[in-house]
Length: 572
Ligand SMILES: Nc1nc2c(ncn2[C@@H]2O[C@H](COP(=O)(O)OP(=O)(O)OP(=O)(O)O)[C@@H](O)[C@H]2O)c(=O)[nH]1
Ligand SMILES: [Mg+2]
Image 1 (cartoon, rainbow, N blue to C red):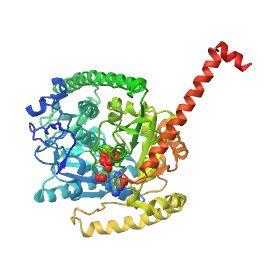
Image 2 (cartoon, protein in one colour; image 1 turned 90 degrees about the vertical axis):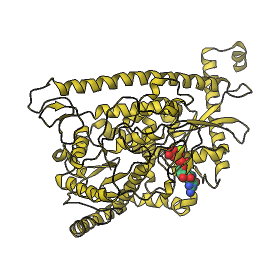
Image 3 (tube, rainbow, N blue to C red; image 1 turned 120 degrees about the horizontal axis):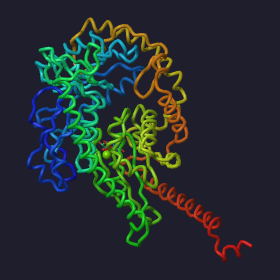
Image 4 (cartoon, helix red, strand yellow; image 1 turned 60 degrees about the horizontal axis):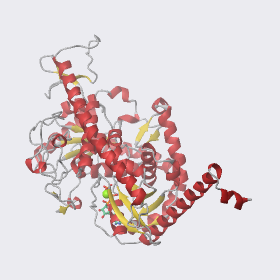
């Protein structure tokens, strides 16, 4: 059992609806205990549940993980590992406790299937996967149903509203894509009022983009929850090319949109209030944060989720922030004060972690929290040096920092920390050589992939319904030539050309930034207390350098615009 540091009693998952489908209910779903929470003074902020998944509130939801195949194999392995960790991270603590230790949770049932993004997505626009894959997953779900039961299916890819809805209809289970699951986890782990508001806003925006209209059993356009309903459109258009059709379906759609809009406005107002308060607090800290009346510098600790940010901040400040192997254990900002070797006091801010394909709804909704990062005096980028895809983690973090408006100067000045060296002493030394051999490595892996692909096809016929806890492939033939990577997606030459130039150039910018900020500054083990003093010294040094730069530039302006008589005479 894990005790969260806060005494805040967490909201319970809604028990009002047991439908397996995504629900758009906006009625009250909270318990009376949560209303007593300190800080939840606004009843409007607690009468809604950001969750889109309704499951038994007394246990963690059981997810079946579907991982579209990626290449080369190490990329697939690390993506699958991340997907399984995401699935296991979706749990809401009750009364400050999680049901089980993360480490003692077994692997969730999962399946590796053909990646439709490798081919043209056009053919599977309705259900993302081809009919064979959809049927195979259905078989696996049926088999699992007799064993333990599955609450929802998690597909580690980004799907449209119609695709999600059609798959739900086909499998009779709620389906979460990567964006949906990450937003669910944020909602489940949100603890402070600020985090709860922002997570709910993100969930709301996600729901809005996933609203679809369905054709009910009587052929009537509706917006119902029936499993038999056929999805007609995400935009409210009829299937007969007659443009907008008014009627019950349309009214329901409009009603849903209006409710979302109303709730969104209310949330935005409350979040704006939080932002204002935060901005005032920052200003006051900057002006006279110390007892001596001097301003306090803030150092934001950023990084990929699970890199060890909270553990490192705790070790540096000798405090006890909540840390856990669950992804997104921290979904808000915590400040801790630290005395640097020079005697200067600074604030370390531990904040929400990043992940590849971080939902844009989350980045937008968490503006108030992420502003703390953009406004910090210095950034410390914590990386898990034992992670296999260190480069991807690094570029993801740089991309998010750019997205939230961190200046290029700050990114260049950022301290890079390789944490968890106790796990990866040999890796840390070997990272440079892996990068150097990258091209050769990929080519070899590509060749391997063809062979692996054939093996999988043979296996598929032999043990169609073998062990679920091991990865399997359901691939047909694949034409993988000329694929490009962008994030964790693979694109064909055609599709890559079709991607907006802004996205491509942003990728190039990030590559350049990655080059610029490449290189570790300090190696640490937060759990063993290694490298902490060195890191504090580096923070001290960087802040001192910054102060000198600021003082020099003030001096320049003084001479240029307001030359004092004494200064002018000294110059002469
Ligand atoms: N072996 C080892 N484990 C570490 C180290 N630092 C952190 N961990 C473990 O890594 C896991 C994640 O640590 P956190 O501090 O929660 O990571 P985080 O970056 O704050 O994660 P999020 O808040 O989820 O984004 C925990 O189980 C820590 O005990 C380290 O230096 N070595
Ligand atoms: Mg954390």
